[in-house]
Image (cartoon, rainbow, N blue to C red; front, side, top):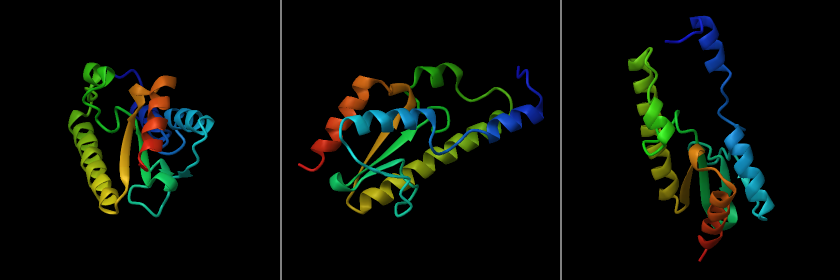
Length: 139
């Protein structure tokens, strides 16, 4: 059961950012150290990808496992949709997943590659692998 009042819970949820999140800042920092340069939240693209690599024609989304319904995430599997207001949260996450798919299709239709990087997978080695994937995309 939630031990916060409805007002406190609402205030907490409203404070969650969509840009410059901790996972995003970490990935950006690590990728920048590898020498990759990127554009942040490029409004020229649907969904404003977190990172855009024009040189490699690659857009990267850094998704939070909860907000984007990461089915392979152990934490998401364990906790899943909140027990309170389950109908609202199920619909919210389902809508996010559908929107993500639509945005990815639209960017790919422009001839760009789209990579999704999940919050639960962030580590130095995974970011290093992401860096290699991005660099190899121009070949």
